Amino acid sequence: MEKQKLLVAKIGGNIIENDIALQSFFKDFSKIVGPKILVHGGGKSATQLAAKLGVKTEMIDGRRITSAENLDIVVMTYAGLLNKKIVSGLQKYNCNAMGLTGADANVIQAKKRPVQFVDYGYVGDVIKVNNEIVKGFLNQEITPVFCAVTHDSNGQLFNTNADTIASEIASAMSDDYEVSLFYCFELKGVLENINDKDSVIEHINLDKYNELRDAGAIANGMLPKLQNCFEALNKKVSKVHIGNADFINDNTTKHTTLSL
Image (cartoon, rainbow, N blue to C red; front, side, top):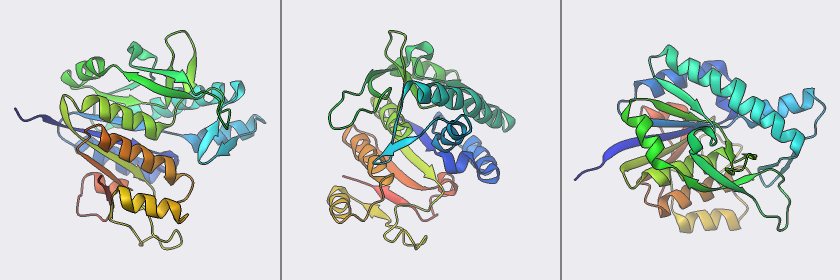
């Protein structure tokens, strides 16, 4: 029996912070027929709020160090302001969205990242996605909108990379759906030359990724994104794409497609 198609999209801070780009995304995403899930980050907003509050933000290899103070800021920003801004924006275009953290309905459990070379603080690594709960929302024609907050089932919230959450959700749903995962951001795709916004690498397989990584051709923030892409493909996600949000409704738009 052919599986139903499911689209999982992730948007980052540069789209969220640009109202024109965000409204355009709301329109395009709402037009997509069939079940869909949205995951959002918001690191830029969290960093801005931290600066206003005099709290230092530290990043290592594109990942945020999350102190107790930073965790409070992350939860306020991601689960509060941004999540509800996005949900209400989608409702404007008749997309029946519902905002969620991983703690809501116990849908995403995580564990604190162990300290190895770096102590990331209150950062959680996903250990389980309750795909039956998510499927229940989809069956009711509700579009789940996940922010980058998870929990450990013992009362502790965690900051979790939104790209990872998108990958883990897409992977968990792949048993029941034919899943396409879209990472939408402000660029057209993965660039050969960061100074040339049109130098999109249109196809990256695992060998090409290793080559680019070893050559230092991939910027820090892109490394974990691509790692998540290949993890999703390894877990039976059908297609993974990276590009400007416009391509979510127009597959002729230039972007990067990933394959094993």
